Length: 329
Image (cartoon, one colour):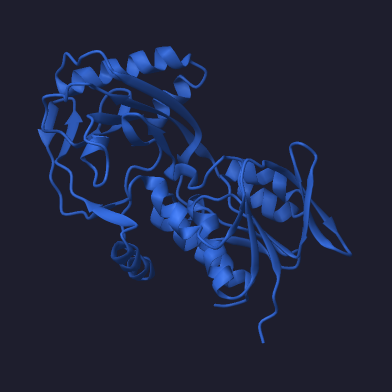
């Protein structure tokens, strides 16, 4: 008979949710903690009068057979849809069509729509920033938040945050902390912009290979989104690092100028602007760890960065953390 553990998961991005759903299916007692109001991590979306704007991951792909099996269920339930945008690329030679046969998927009616559906039945403690862990030999793990409130005890803890945020939570597992400290993550700026009058361009998605931008998408071209013309621009890691402390209004101006050049403006005055800085947008170098563990302490770590980034890898990492905790191969 499987022993029932009380398990805390710190981080309600897809990796943490994936671990949580797998463990709950095994009858485990799971509580997720997240410092944000909602869930999804870097699948973040912002709800506005111009529709839901995807501020983090823009889409996901499915390559692993286990993930594809899970994806079919999400498609059947209407939690995700396929997105087939008019693809372009931009480089020193300019803008040109760049179609491919890659299947892209998005959450409905926004990227966080998927995480919210997956959370159903799980216990989420939101707006709670867990800042440190304390292990009590008698009761187990205690979680202390940034207001010095204590949560727990829990028999097992899964840390499902970006690597730099995981390190202070792993002080009582020095070898694990040392391994995680080797991971570097790049920053990124995201700018969401909407217009009263749709831009006269066939572009719906664009990989950018010159200048400060890395990616452009017509957010309103995604299934289930508002018809109001809206766009999401994402910077390169190098540009974000050079402008890490730049004022947001200046970041918006510079990113819009780059967008104008790519689209072949002039673009009209935006009806809406929102800019967000991601300190830990993506891993600098890919890792193939899957998940990390100090089983003797009941401490586990997962995240997309454990497998080189991407939404699919976040889900796979969470699944591996759950299997490891349950001592399944």
